[in-house]
Amino acid sequence: MKVVAIAGSIVGSKTKTAIKYATDQLLDKYPDAEVTLVDLAEYDIQFSDGRNYLDYQGDTKKVTETIMEADALLIGTPIFQASIPGSLKNIFDLLPVGGLEGKVASMIVTAGSQRHYLIPEQQLKPILGYMKAQVVQSYVYIEDVDFYRKEITNDDVKFRIERLVEDTMTLARTYQRILEEKEAEYDF
Image 1 (cartoon, rainbow, N blue to C red):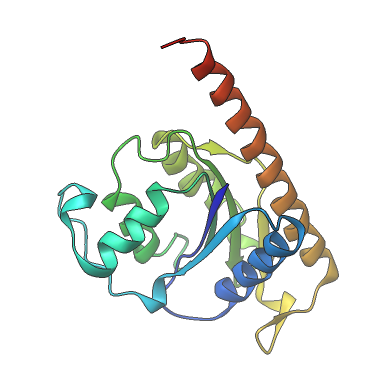
Image 2: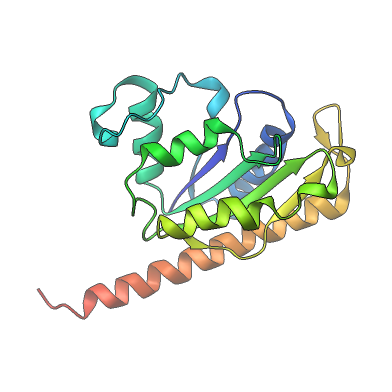
């Protein structure tokens, strides 16, 4: 199973720290999974201009193809100005409308305070649903106070990330089995 974890910002460290913790958990608990961490800060991604994702070159093509080949996505996003960052939205804009069909997606969100707790519900889940992802309903919301020197200091946050990883993999494996059973019905 291919899992792609996305650190969806080109600035800051908290989202990357949280996604890195999640990928470490994935690698530790699911050694058979092929895990790729895509930190958007490390890539030079073009803005979407309406082309098919296969028509882009360089980092843009590499990142979009990596996402399209995934069975599951673990999406990390900070909240800036009561919204997901443009760098993450651009990734979704680069993909086809139904580009997440057959994929399971879960979310880890970092923010400065509790005030933006519903942003994933109001912005990210609708995008993922529109693109036909199977969305893990719970998500992990982490505030600034839960980090210190690029480390998560709140044990409850660590537990919730571990649980999200487990829920993501359980749903992805279950969904994969359902798709395989459906395919087997076609006998050709």
